[in-house]
Amino acid sequence: MTIDVKAIRNDFPILERKVYGKPLVYFDNAATTQKPRCVVDAIAEEYYSVNANVHRGVHFLSQQATSLHEASREATRKFINARTTNEIIFTRGTTESINLLASVFAQSRLRQGDEVIVSVMEHHSNIVPWQLQAQRYGFVLKVIPINDQGELLLDEYRKLFTPHTKLVAVTHVSNVLGTINPVSELISIAHAHEVPVLVDGAQSVPHQPVDVQDLDVDFFAFSAHKMYGPTGVGVLYGKERWLDALPPYQGGGEMISHVSFEKTTFNELPFKFEAGTPDYIGTNALACAIQYLLHIGMDSIAAYEHQLTAYATERLLDIEGLRLFGTSQQKGSVLSFQVGNIHHFDLGTLLDRMGIAVRTGHHCAQPLMARLGIEGTVRASFSFYNTTDEVDALAAAIRRIARMF
View 1 (cartoon, rainbow, N blue to C red):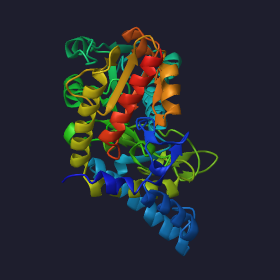
View 2: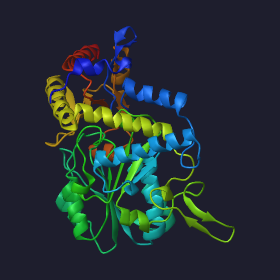
View 3: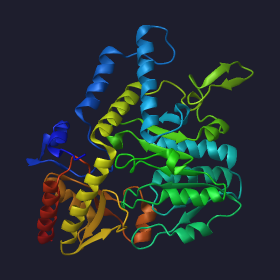
View 4: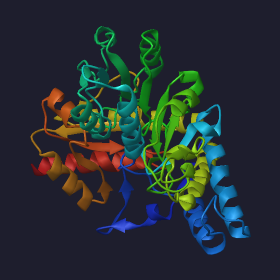
């Protein structure tokens, strides 16, 4: 299946606007993606016609809203091929998903002297939650290093395991380098030591097919807003046996079975981990985003974005003084770079004045920046609604800015 980019762009009204009188070129998709009309329409339609709290009402609207909410859970299950909807926990995003797991896993499984393995390329949201729990329970973080191409060193990874290793937490795709990590192999190595694995899938789920059963991953986290859905909604997938064994994250309504002042018993999965009113409007919009992605086709999306990234790589590397960070053979649709001695903030600001939206800074990955010996980069990240013409506009704008300096 080929992608009709022109038709797709018609689904995203924001792509028609101008910035500083220039046509918007949106290359900040790793931070958040734009939303198709169907997603925004689904939000408005549910508020206008179906809005009612879920799971608790016997009246028609509540029953209808509950049906949509649970249908969204099933759509999410199918999208990542989880075994059962009991394994789909709705959260506020990847960050909360990881914080949830870090909290309950540390509380029940981690003690003084235990070890959690992460990688040097992790986003802060897969570092800081573990550090916070390490301060409380006394376990330590061990770090997988990378080579100069931005690839994990698997031999060094193997050496990190000891009898005290209790969990591996690693990103699927680096939000800075674009490296697609060999998570199947990482998981296989960990499982040989009887160690479970959490994969941060925030940067993979929007761009490529993901099958959690095929990966045999124990936990997998991602966000709706990075996959053309609403903000404030995310998912934590967990194997049912693990979720059954872990304690609740928060207390409140919905996550209980029975409450007395003497004792509280907890609800069944997945509700044990979903205290309070969920964002049932947002989960329905997530299901619409999933439907939209499946209509285009995840394989088609992956192929198109791979071609676009290859084209952009060739065009940018032709610019004198441009240095690209992350040159793995297995690479997602992210390009991080510097140009000569131009500060990344200055370059990003000037690109913005030309209508081109990119991200600048450390990208919430300061340990990786330290490994690379830099303070920050300019990052262009691509979507299936981006075009080679937009890439050409980026290259021309960088050349123009470089001449100014």
